[in-house]
Length: 405
Image (cartoon, rainbow, N blue to C red; front, side, top):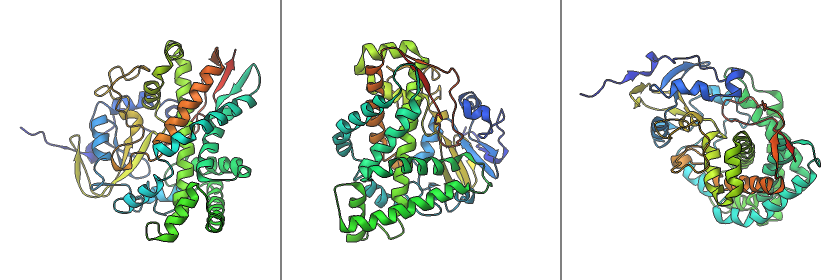
């Protein structure tokens, strides 16, 4: 006999779920466990939203863009805190617009193009480590993870070196908007940073029309000017999104990955002894402490997921971080195991919205972490409780102090 679905509106979360609670931000994983034991549930942030935590349910939502839309138009709470505004981007669109924008974004972030960057990524990494304080303690987020992500995406875009620090400041200010609760006014600093970034890209577009190069901005400007592939209102938001997402994902992966290794010395020793494990180690870093913890969809028509009926027009929060700790998919999910196989995590999403910058994040993080391990034979945490930046969507260390022997 078919089991009757449970209406989402009647579901109750077994334990309090408040993604803005400082305890949740410090360690969300204990709060995810009860959610993994039940069907999708309704929580109230500012308005009711359905929380999807289990791996199979998350995968079902991510692979059904027809019923679960990525467009922001139906979720005013998101538009209110998004400094990029209502512009359509590769993250906030559905086919056929998404298909077109993704194809364009992928031109500069293909595996082949990223591989060409590897020697340059190695050079930048070692240059940054050279500038770290000699001996004693230093902050890996400040001296490596943050600036490396900025420098790499800046070179791909073709941004002059004079603007690299400004790019980081703009990205940090815009990302800070994800820390405020729905219904709260946007942060003035975030809005200013978004406006400044748009002005910068507008000027760069004019320059690239006169002085085209091999960079991604020039490629996208040509696509805009030569045909209908890129609309007049789409180019600047696309560039802004590529910058912010690339910095956020790569920075978080490097920081979270190094922290996981330092907190698990046996795994760290295994990786030092067997560097060939780096590819599987990196996938485990992505699963274990997911850089982007959640994504939002809009249920456009009534749908059933995991035994729960989700009403039409309901916001759906897919907890990627929770899905990646689901014991139904990953044996001993709270164990950090760099040899874990298989490891079909959802850290980069799934389906048509699978992260277009995944290869860039992987190559950059792998290079950075390998360089750190080669340079520092005796690296230890200098603080037992690293601090995190507040964000519903991303898990980013604000500092990672280490002691290098």
